[in-house]
Image (cartoon, rainbow, N blue to C red):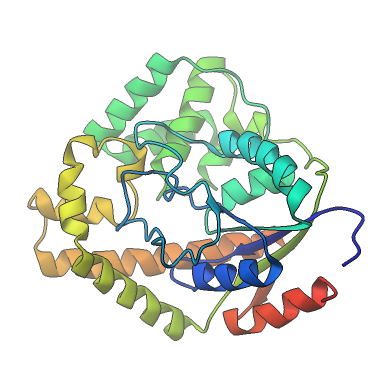
Length: 301
């Protein structure tokens, strides 16, 4: 394999599409390691609701950024970018190809293109906004962001409250719109990226999502959520899978409705993930069964 630069093989895609099994198979073939870009699998305390691959599912392949942080640490896309660039420098000494996989688009984008330099913010303000989020819900914060930065408010994912909190803290700390800090051009990286996004026919993907939710519930998702109930104000537990369980535990709806919401919201999330990667414009969309042959062709193997 001749390459002027080392290669980062990016295998992105929505939840439950089949990233883990495929990447393990590719890593075994390429004799390389895997970097996880799943913003919830970082957290060592959570396993069931994050669909974290078991040691058996990891297939003897070294996985980085799984169980790397505590739920009490917020590991931002910028943090991921900085730490992963250092890691890649080390990995590329041993491997001409390294695999990056996950569905957290902003983390992948941060690594591939870099993020805008953001101002330092008052941590007390961040805590105050998070307390408001817990007390009032997302809508009042979204409305405040709309007043301060209508451009960003119109494009932010309202399913991700921390994005709204982050934008608000910058607006309130600096007196400037958050979107003013998001104009930077992408940076050059010392590697070549092959970008693939996994996709399946919609009904096939949705059936896999429903099956995964049933599996999570059978494995003890509700008990895992109960175990960390005192931490539900933290970002890691405000996410898909846990927030629906906490709504049920608060008595807002019955178990049947909880299951319906878990499956519906997971489907919606998968759709958003696919839309996001399509908007990036540089990903090749493939069914998982097509990827191995295409990757080996692209690598000249």
